[in-house]
Length: 514
Image 1 (cartoon, rainbow, N blue to C red):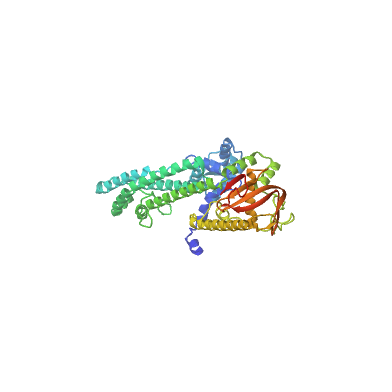
Image 2 (image 1 turned 45 degrees about the vertical axis):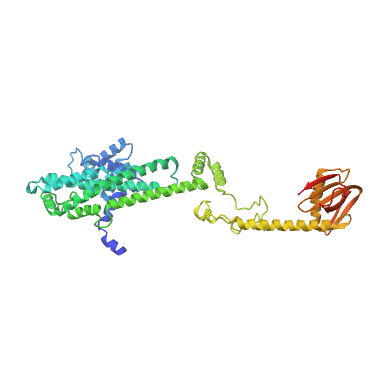
């Protein structure tokens, strides 16, 4: 592949690339550009080194005559300037020696400098597309078809002018389209595109791209149909153009002709509209518009995700940059260390104790255990939950479990109540833990109604069919369980069935619960 490229590379290509070296010279680029600007200011400008030095001094560039002479000789070596052949009228030999070294711009040097000036004067902003040329191209092609139908009476000069305008318009249209979509890609690739700038750009993209697509869709078929009709009579058109006066070089080589004078140029123009050599120009424009709109939607999704998860740090970085802009060196170091955590790699071990912590203040971060970072934050930079939403659980199983637990609790209470009823008098009684817990529950309800009883009081539970009767007594009631002993001072406790009359229980006050 490299050998083929070397063969296809023109032998004089390197010398032509040297024409651009003055614009990228390391030390004196601005001086070279100022010199070339003077030589291309008017037609056939020839200057000596002394005259060029005087003009540079007026422009604010102070160079001696010898330095200007060196610059001109270097430009001549690169091919940008050539020696002038004008005879000079001088009074002394010294003036003749100085005036003999006069320079003027070469053909390729002038073309290169016009390109350099175009690049230097161009802005980074958007360039309008010359979409109005498409409608004009249709009218001009109609005029060409009319002139071709006139036969021997056609106006060849007017025909040549129309052909040149068609190809010039096409070149200007394609260049403006390339610049416009290159600008779109440049802006859409920016990660910080947000806020009012994004809203303005969105309006530009949606409205202007749609306008371009509509013009191309309206005029491209008309241009393609007329070009196909012109190509059918292309031989006669080219023969008529060949009758016009032309130029040839001193060595007999043909001169560089205006566009539209060869069959290849017309075939290339037809292929651009019809897609004869691949995808057509209108199809490429539609694909570029779809790609730009897709990237616009991707930026919108990114901004929405950033606003929801806090990933976008554009405002924070702008504020940080403003701090750096006004800070001195020492303060800038402190801001950097605080903002990016650029502290010595030491574990301070502050905060709550870590389970099984092995890192000490002398442990390096290289040897310490890594911190687990969620894959969503590590790979995509957001905290958005991934995966599908989980199904709503069926409450039937929970209901069955709760019912089973309630049934078990009811059976446990029923067993404890039966045990208390079997014991009856609780003085020096030995009962289970469940019975003891049920007794404490009934006793708390009983004492809540009468904290210092003067007569017998009772607390009944209709669900368990039992009644706890407490009678004041100077002694105490001791109840034994396997995990300890319960002592109730000043009361004698008995448990009787609820069906027993209160009169036989000698109870003056009753409390009901159940």
